[in-house]
Length: 425
Image (cartoon, rainbow, N blue to C red; front, top):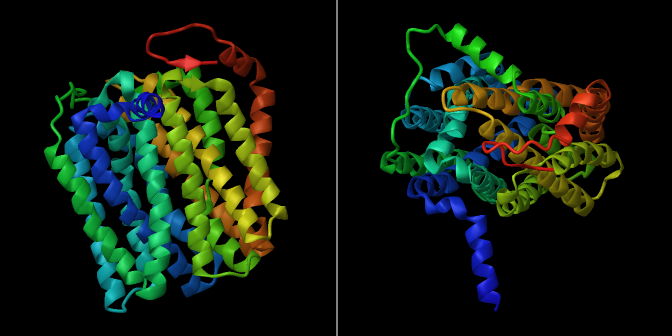
């Protein structure tokens, strides 16, 4: 009986893995992203111990994500012109080179703060093209029918890496040093590069190259503006991605200044965010057939802001672990539904540009959020990192609810069932 019940559940959760090309990409990312999170975790802790300044930790994020803020919309227009697979081969190779340079500088004891800033800028420039290409690549691998499940399973990989990566990074840093975290990341890129070499997808028709990039960007923005679902999604994502997703800056300062603990607590709390997000990803993969639940979508974005405000009362490691895990779950569920709204409301001609807006909101807003959180903790203390971000997010959400209440009411109660939008109320 248990087996008969379990098999349909597993088939439902992992439905997009029936596509061979997606399996290759998914397994390649399983390995590569663990290395990525090992490097991210080690780098943030290294910068904080090197400078003892939350502001300077935040500046690393500013350098990494500012190129995405400035150029990702233009990158989306270029992504629509060329093969997504070929773009990913180039961007993943560039990311591997960045990890190798970081490893060599650390190994020869030459690594300085300004090196990390420059390498972060290079990383951001590469991700400017990598993210819209990767997000718009999923539908080529699985088709429209399994896109939400594919997004959810990709999130399981990302968030499993957020659990394993920081945990491994803590062990490696304590016993061997940060340089080994960087080297493991460099090696891990071979997995995703190998998967891309084995993937074969039918080439899609591209936009005429005679068009100017700026014209294509304007056309893409006009296309987005015409969709009520996309515009509502953009407003909410802009708020949450900017103010409610600054864990990388806040957690190391929180662990040291509020909890009075070291690298093990920091990596443990980073893993907590990953655990919550991983559970959220599995949950969202299971309910993918139901589509985007609009009320659940709104519940997630409001609750994550309130939880971050509540963190002002948290000064115990176990309570912090639980709260951060819940925040990870809510953020993942929100981002998963936001991604699906973009995917399901975009046609093939505009998908790269639409997903570049997703990248712009998801990562391009990070410099603002990192600067805000880092500056707040620099002058008011680490205890105010989460609460002030939560207050900003909740206040802006309230403003949107008040100003756009009629549009939101209409969107929530829209009973039109379009074939290309799997939205359940």
